[in-house]
Image (cartoon, rainbow, N blue to C red; front, side, top):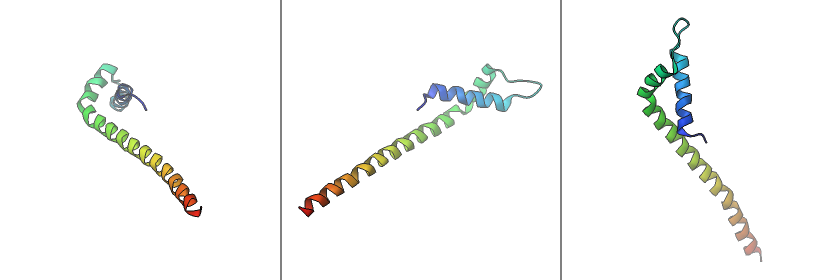
Length: 79
């Protein structure tokens, strides 16, 4: 998982690339000013994505544990 700081600079890089023209390149500082206006929405999307991934990992972890319990119960019933 990457930090929000690195995500911010990735986003600034994208904005800079998008706003750069052949004749007039966009500086890093200008890109930061432009990116700061839309960053809150992008940040919210990234945070939601992280929460979804966490829930998915937890769900996968629980799903792996459940069959072990079911197998143990089956073995107890056989005895």
